[in-house]
Length: 103
Image (cartoon, rainbow, N blue to C red; front, side, top):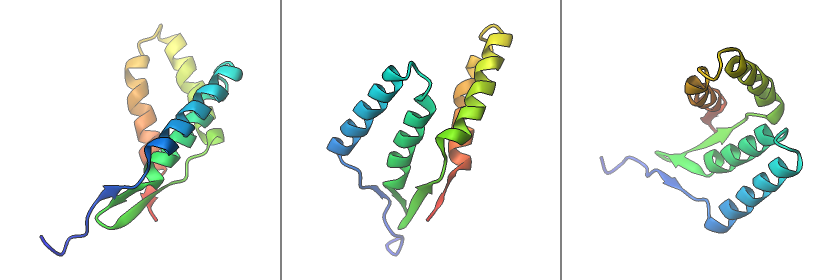
């Protein structure tokens, strides 16, 4: 057990605050259209600052890639009268994990 490398997160509070404020501003000023960009920016910051057992994680998701799924999920929510929204968080998590790997 002693030879296992440590897992840690090396992001800072000021960085998180800056990315969060930027994401909110971009989302508000674009009336929500750039929300997928804000999510990718936040996920990238969080995942890229994570180290698991000495191996850094990397996020390669893009706003364009998420935007297509976002439209599809939004339409599914409308068609199912909101029922799909129960699965929306799971779909987003699956997308995020699909674009996360060891650097």
